[in-house]
Length: 264
Length: 264
Image 1 (cartoon, rainbow over the protein chains, first blue to last red):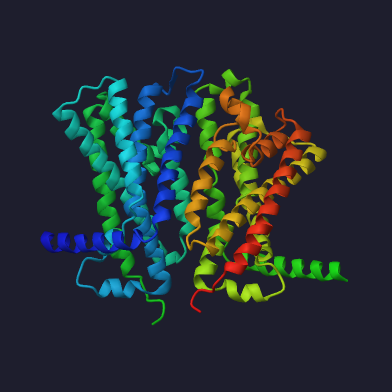
Image 2 (image 1 turned 135 degrees about the vertical axis):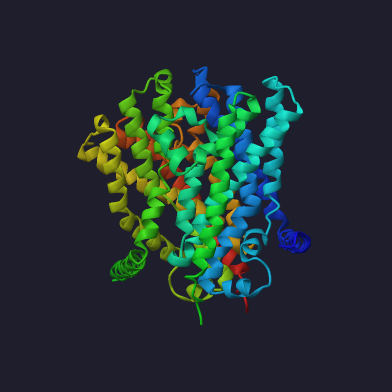
């Protein structure tokens, strides 16, 4: 591994994909409006849940907004990096162009995971941060160094889990060729990350923390942010995310053994 | 004779598309699964006793969300994505020469897909009744018939909206971002995530004039036996269909004049 070489390659990726995306200027504008409307819609939905209730699963409206904020940031990251790149894997495998990726003197997972970027997701990330700042004011959270590090760690772990889930499903294309709809299933499951884990019934809570740790992704960072999380939960999240990352890496290398080019 | 010809055309189209769809049964099963968001929502509603405040019993609410799932399954439209791909690949040009509006082809595709999806939706609802045995009910034939018609009308509304958006492909190559923009109000206002009856008054005052509640809320209420205005619902659906159809005809004739084939 040569970090400097990879950094240099990545700046090139950034440059080319930004240039090509900025060609569709109206598109980006529409995406920005979509991001704003989507956030308004989620808050609207949340306000329906809270219109006659004080709490949902022990979370008050002001606290549940933090989950929305973190969800928005993660969704922005998904739209910026994961979605454009990982859906490309499906195309690579269908058209047999994965050969060109594998022949390059660079790590194939690095290449297919970071090649493209979709700038319209940036606004969602910014919106999420604004919502978080607003939540800090209304929840009277004192900002200090330990809070910052702990919440950063937990958010980074969430990003790793999210990435691994996406990457895992996209890797299965090597066997199944078409996995668009599997991605749709993942997306609809991810949707529940907007709500606190405790608001679901016991069986669903188990399902979304053991089998597909989607609820982990937003609920634990929000708890950390509120300062009500226990240490073991943070440790658990670190363990889960590293297991996911390592497994996804192993799975990719394993899957490549089964890759047979489409045209040759 | 002309009607005979049309009949034969439609029948052939349907048969061809149905066999096409049968090729990818797993895909369609996955797509059926990706529509289970209403069930997660139901879980939040009942688990937090949110339904008491809006005077809908647990059982009626679970029926509502099951029906919402069904209506969504049979009114999902993806014309924009097919049309965008076809127009970028230059496949639209041969379609335009044929004496048949290409949208009939997409229409047949959707109907065929719905027929293929039917068994999967039945299986999912079977599991739903295993977990919620108390919500099992049998709507009477008249209601069933009316709700099938209203679901079909809801499908028509969405099909027309998306066709209009798809025609924008003639002007801007990427219409799918406009589709994503329209999808946001469809998601939050159609009653897929929360019944429209639970919306706050300032939204309810104008929402029944928009097409959104008639996409899912109206057919689902009708089928599940919740209170709804049958006559008002149907007339609003028909008014919207007529309006959208006029817009579609206009934009289609404008668009085909504007059309320049890709790659030629």
